[in-house]
Length: 365
Image (cartoon, rainbow, N blue to C red; front, side, top):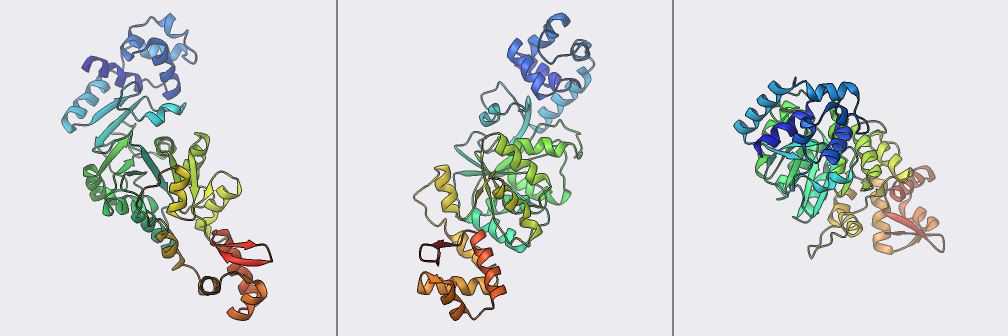
């Protein structure tokens, strides 16, 4: 087994071999050791394997790097997970570009029955922070939370998971010997005891900007669903959401005000029909088939309401006390001018808090 591991690591260190071509080699030869034992002519019969790639497999130039990696794994007791291993995250097997090898340190089950990825901006608002914390507080304890251990929403999600007794996994864009950002070192150490850290990158791999999109595909592919809290139209969270959508995973987006830059990406995902509108934890659990006897999923709605404007809260109060109202009735009770009323109603409707019903009336959902 140790000898096979040597060849598994060696395959990931061949510059011309990526996840897709490496997987084709394993499918053809069955084991990594058989790949290195094959003749150059036979290697080139595999689709996508070039002359240069075959030369690199046969020249033995990666031997020193492989030895160093194995020594590091032993020293730090890190578990290597090859794509053919039983412990390898099976959801990733359905992704065409799944990593050949993952490095894992932690206690969580990478094949748990319920895994949710949460992503969002590094520059979150109070609304995003409160929403994330409330969602994590209301989730069943058997949901495993995955994120990228970045600042902002990622860190908030990991911390809230730890606080509420949920296992949480950080997927890194560098080796497990690094921690980026450095502010998250203590958080990462806590996660090792209640979740874990996962990376496809060997030790001494820095947090290069090109590694983050690669990290994002693992965040998207390892989970049953991805929840986007806050994001602009461009950024890592949108990449993750698009990947999850393309992997046929469920995507949920937390709506926000149309004037809020941090919600523009979420609204874009909803507009493009790439995500469902997140309205409550209960709604998400029902969509995923994750309902439990534990109720309280609607608590997120109540806590988010506290972040609404005074005009929006006033309308909610009127509808909550009086039931459905016509627009004229709301005008007379709220005493708002037409501009403020229109803005408040639009924001509430976008967030799926109110709905229009027959008779030209408006009611709370």
